[in-house]
Image 1 (cartoon, rainbow, N blue to C red):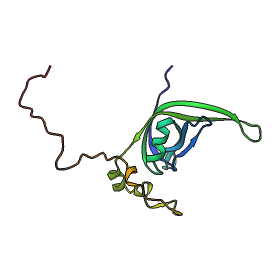
Image 2 (cartoon, rainbow, N blue to C red; image 1 turned 90 degrees about the vertical axis):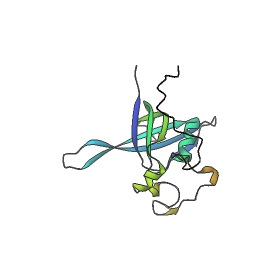
Image 3 (cartoon, rainbow, N blue to C red; image 1 turned 135 degrees about the vertical axis):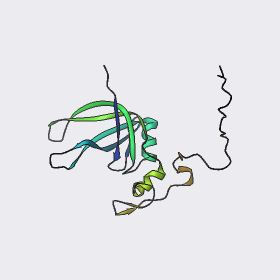
Image 4 (spheres, rainbow, N blue to C red; image 1 turned 180 degrees about the vertical axis):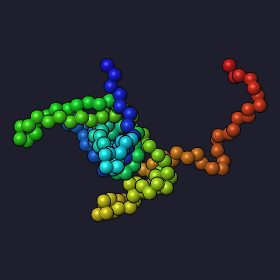
Length: 162
């Protein structure tokens, strides 16, 4: 059977990191994903999809993703059933993440006005977020300018190397 979901959306809140009794990290977050078509009154429609990451992937999401960031998720759709406090049967549909990656660079996030979803700034207008330690700065996606180990290859050779 085939069960594969590929989603791209913005986090609706900061990811929530917890640990199971066996100390396995589990991170829950929700993505807001706009639909391609508008509703009957011309309003944009959005789906809100719950996602769960486990282990090192959970720790990665909790450390580097915040509310408003664009994320790309690859995983599988799963359902979970339980009984609530009133004894009613409940079902949750969520994406169990195999991969979670950045949907945009920090530079483009800031250019698009989502800087508040990153480090610094206010969280929901009520609390100041601490600045990250130097060792926790997110990896850069742009190549450094100037001296670099990378060099451009000449195209004039024409010989196939194998």
